[in-house]
Amino acid sequence: MGLSTFDAYKHLQVVVATHKAYAMPADAVYLPVFVGAALSGVAAVPPGFARDDGGENISAKNKGWCELTALYWAWKNLKGAEAIGLVHYRRHFKGRRGVASGAELCAALASVNVLLPKKRNYFIETTYSQYVHAHHAADLDETRTILAERHPDCLAAFDAVMKSTSGHRFNMMVMKRPVFDGYCTWLFDILSELERRLDVSSYSEYDKRVFGFVAERLLDVYVRTKGLTFAELTVRHLESQRWPRKIVAFLRRKFARKIAAG
Image 1 (spheres, rainbow, N blue to C red):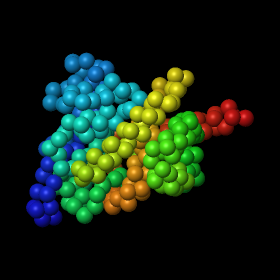
Image 2 (cartoon, one colour; image 1 turned 90 degrees about the vertical axis):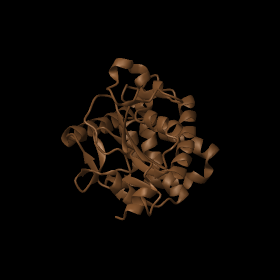
Image 3 (tube, rainbow, N blue to C red; image 1 turned 180 degrees about the horizontal axis):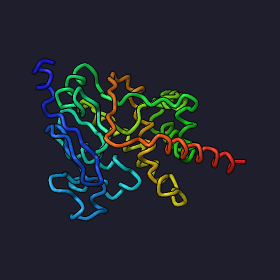
């Protein structure tokens, strides 16, 4: 990679959403942001971490919006960044030697609009069926209604994404600034309206994280609708994925919902 490629995005900032003290990448492009800071108090935020409750923010919504409170904070407050990314304290894009360096991310971004994690494949489930077996169908159904009213140009992409058996997950991405601004404007408009319409009072604490879950499915909708070029990077998990436990939990939710539906 030539130095000029890196210089073109020397103002890249990758926000690392975290809710606790954790070892962070040493590369200067990474900015740890403590999410839900408005709910946690000053003492909970580790030294050197940014807070998602400074400037214009939605920090108080963190329980339902998850890492999106860091995304919103970055959108509204990182004015000098020419490219912005979002990763998680325990999930990063993989580089040649562990977590991807800023230079590696810049090189990958040079010829595309967006960097995304490699797709997750469900094989026997569509994006829609996998979601409704794990959460509530109303979340996606109401989202589609909002798209029909506010962004009808996105309906074809939404329907295609819902029928797909794979998708980019985790709300992880790196975007060039114009693309990032457009995406956030679109995403937070939809989710704010969804929050206004959706009654989550009977949801479990897990399912109340609906806005983060829906956003994971909307990323592909935006990329498809806008015809954005993208590159996929492997995700490096810093903790065990506990796949046997996750599979059992998913199957329990799936069959419990079938039984409840009669």
